[in-house]
Image 1 (cartoon, rainbow, N blue to C red):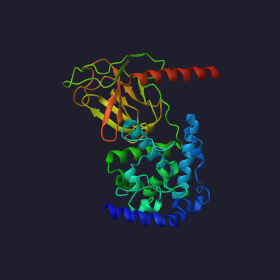
Image 2: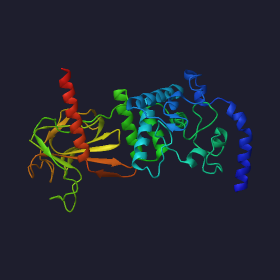
Image 3: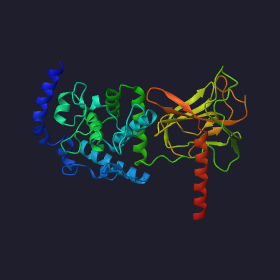
Image 4: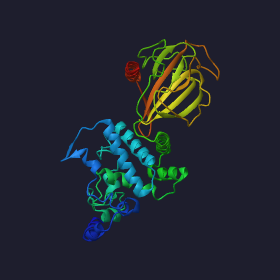
Length: 366
């Protein structure tokens, strides 16, 4: 079988020169003809020169990524915010599982294994020839028109993802179906759709500012309570930080995100769960109530009031007063298959300090 494959591979390589002369799909697209045919995109050169990665500010990175998304969008008609959503989701999974997923591009977070890129039966797992990659059923595409489908090239990586979406329609349902056919995971579909809505709402990439969950300057106290025992609901440990404040003190979103869960939980009482672009799930529990017109699926901003501190929980719906009023705040990270909690106390301290500094800066400007 192997000699048959190798013979087929040699045949494909012999015809690759002819295939390479044909323009790639993106380079041939009328809206960007001539704009994407350079051998290497300028935006990639800004972060990788002579094999050494340069330092870029966050603003420069966001600008370069947005330029990349816009250029791919022009050539494929896939909205930039959908490309950004896929890229960001892939980036969060790589950060959560760094041992099994390498960072391939300089700007993008898209990950494809060598087998997926070149084709499972391809004898050359480092293949960059588009014709032979297609022959062996690989997903890798040449996005910048240089004749090579490079697994470490940002344009090629993102165009490969966009080319999958191009097989489907433009409607939201079509987008979800395309994601399912790609990931075969309802969790991944939900996350990417959520991210897409957040990016489309604000029209920008820099959506990572945070606020403290209680108004800074109000009367509250907190310390690390991670891992302590619980007094109700059986043997379990505390997965969060308790912020003690008066009944009715506003509880605020710490992030740009989307309301994923809202309602009663026997342990957390009236609670809200918000998903952010880092793929973190922010959990607010023991609320006395919610702000008017806040619903599941709504998009929120840092510092936006979402409810009020209370003492609900530890029983059937409406149970309250079994403990002093406080906000239980927890953070969970999505690893692709499962979510796991981690201690939010260091984040809370940082966000509190950052917000105080922003307030001081704003007061000085007045």
